[in-house]
Amino acid sequence: MITIGLDLGGTNVTAIAHDGAKVLASTKHRTPTTGGRSDVLDLLARAVDETMDAAGLKRKHVAAVGVGSPGIVTDGTVGNASNVPGFQSRFALDEEVAARTGLPVRVANDVTAAAVGEHRLGSGRGEDDLLAVFVGTGVGGGLILGGRPFEGGTGGAGEFGHLVVRQGGAVCPCGRRGCVEAYAGRRAMVLAAERAVAGGRASILFEVMREKGKPRPTSGVFRDTLQRGDALLTELLEDAVATLAAGIATAVNLLDLGRVVVGGGLADKLGAPFVARIEAAAQRSLFLQPPRARIVPAALGDHGGAIGAALVARDD
Amino acid sequence: MITIGLDLGGTNVTAIAHDGAKVLASTKHRTPTTGGRSDVLDLLARAVDETMDAAGLKRKHVAAVGVGSPGIVTDGTVGNASNVPGFQSRFALDEEVAARTGLPVRVANDVTAAAVGEHRLGSGRGEDDLLAVFVGTGVGGGLILGGRPFEGGTGGAGEFGHLVVRQGGAVCPCGRRGCVEAYAGRRAMVLAAERAVAGGRASILFEVMREKGKPRPTSGVFRDTLQRGDALLTELLEDAVATLAAGIATAVNLLDLGRVVVGGGLADKLGAPFVARIEAAAQRSLFLQPPRARIVPAALGDHGGAIGAALVARDD
Image (tube, rainbow over all chains, first blue to last red; front, side):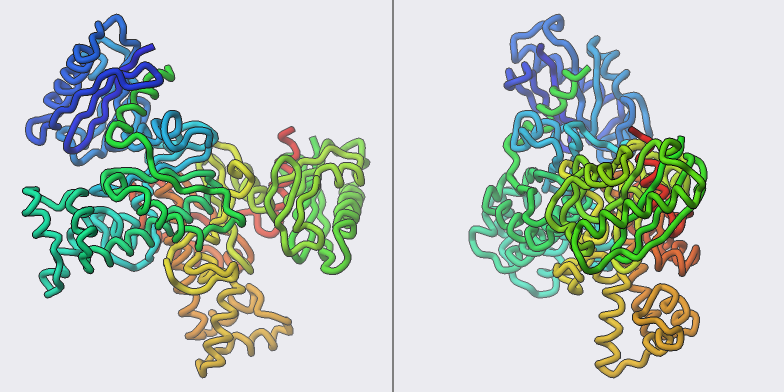
């Protein structure tokens, strides 16, 4: 059976054709930042078509489409996704994509879809109690409990970035204090670096950004800046490691998880040593001894969300 | 159908006969602190007999026995319960109690059982995504997810007292840093008060304890000390409220819970105003807006664990 998986991000739409074991073809488009909901929906339909073409598939070969969407997903509808035009107020995303593609459509939260991908085909294989943490611009989380995606009663579960690990601490981009994302998200770390530099601290972060010709400090800029020994970013990364570790230990202690998979743009760029540091720090806060939870790097990279969406589409 | 519920605590064994709607009779015995596992098991069997007698029941009227036990419960076995003699290494508690009582036995973690009680007959009625938090000597938690008790892959879930909410903060009785219980458990608060008094801070906590003829500061001593305006204990309680709130918000953000029930010896003594303060503080850290999670006082009091155990026994 072949399905198409779509990963709708704030920046890109990644689409893949998948046969249940491997990616047959993939395409990537910029997510519209202007216009409205129908521009996004039209792009999703075009991405499906182009991915079928790239894989040499006709519509009759494709069983279903899976969509991983930001926001809160309930029964095929999505809402509360502020970084995609027209996705703030709730609507039936499954019906809209089905109408445009003529294919059955299943919708999941994008991070949940990525967790499904890691669970079935990535670093989460063989473990049915799993948290997948994605560290990029922000910090997201997806849960697998008892072998199945867990999205909570109203689809709002998995907000790993907003576990409170330093109560009363730094202000998070969400406006609250002491969340994991307030220390471990790239957006929050850039804001902290800007404040420190404005206050007179030295850092080559923004110089490296300009050298690499980037409009903002990407995960690659972070990696290169750290490799050059920048003291400020090294300190910020220590806080990120410590708070990710505290949040992961918290989730493990609450849910008796067997594995935590760490991925996302920043984690992928910093690689296994970054995840090993998180694991070492988390050991200090794990309640069950000896701990059964392993903390491992994600395996599927950029395509994980689309692969998970393709797998979710197979389930119906 | 009538079942007997046993709540095995470090101090007391509470037993009740229950018809699914109400308590028919109850008994209370001191948990043996010396001797071995068989002394505890013999007491559990005696508690069943005496409770049947108190309710005017014969063995043939009782369908099953439910046991709520501390420690980690898996498939009727229990282990890792350090405060009950002989319950540290794992053994088949269900078989031992069945052999002594001649009745079918179901075992659950004591806090999970109490959560089941609140879910079915207490403050958790009508909500299938629920955390029950119990604040006493320590801080425990029990989860109901999708309407069913959630104990995790190896029975170790629900360690709410060991969520990390002040990463790098105060040392918890568990030896780790920054856990909820490090601030909100009575044992930790007494240790903090002792240290403060030794360091010259004034407090009437230990004076009230002596006035009430108690060997240690009980929840009642806490309540009376707070009512008399003790500044030190008031400060410690503020930290307890803040950390309970952060832990509850963390659990809600991770699991999209609809309700959190707060009980246990200290919460029951301090009553609804204490829980209202926790709810007000938690609102600042809840991610979903408007929040759907309500934070409410537990309804079943001291008998909650035994009632939950009796309900668990009905399920087979």
